[in-house]
Amino acid sequence: MQRDMYNNVKVVGFVRVLVATAGNATAYSNSVDIGENRSASIFLSARDIDNYGATPYTLDQYDDVSIVVQDSEDNANFTDLDPVEKQYGAKTLEASSDKVGFFATRRYVRLKVVGNNLETLANNKLELSGVAVAEPYARPV
Image 1: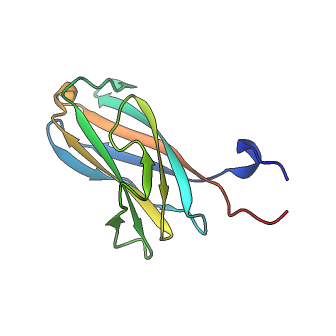
Image 2: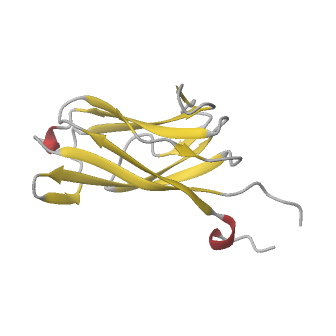
């Protein structure tokens, strides 16, 4: 059995979240069904959306974008995962591309994005989009 990223990781969904205003805002991504996989990662790309298109988002020293993974058994009632024990990687957005990994206890996951002091955006929007990938349960060889 080969143990490499190509053969042992599968795409389980795509996420997109739009922080609608500059300043302070909280937004939620769509949910992703991770099935029986309980550990996964989401690779994120941040873009600054204006009336003319999108450019990579450049954080300034005052911008604060926190990322919290939430999970749910019924795809309706979501709760935050413990950021210390269940979430690793990006807890705050550090660059225009980042990743967050997690150990979920339930089937559906989504991102909660909290933006504080997003003055860089002015009247634009911050879009985070990405792909969720998971490693299937290890099977005996």
